[in-house]
Length: 153
Image (cartoon, rainbow, N blue to C red; front, side, top):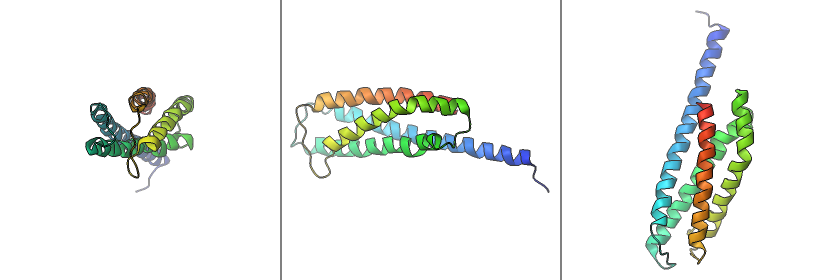
């Protein structure tokens, strides 16, 4: 049985779409876990440096936060930026959104650098403000990601 070019192209199309769906599923799963932990950390206020519950929760949150931003960057966005997305409208949307998403990535990584409790844990008086600003950045990121994921679907 001979496979036609059309059948080969159709199979490739299905594989690419399945790959996009898998990436979206992974990203939304990471996002849900991160948001749940964000809410748990925010609910621990007032924050005390010596509270091991706060330190443990903050450590877990920072790890999941970094995993979440990495899942977006190293899977979905990298795929698009590297030209693996063939749909012109999706690639153009990604090109417009990526700089804004990158700013939220930087904010998340800065928060992690400041509050990751693996080697140290010092919750300073700016923590409430930093957590609030991170929350705003994450809300912006989620809106931008949703636009991109809708276009990919």
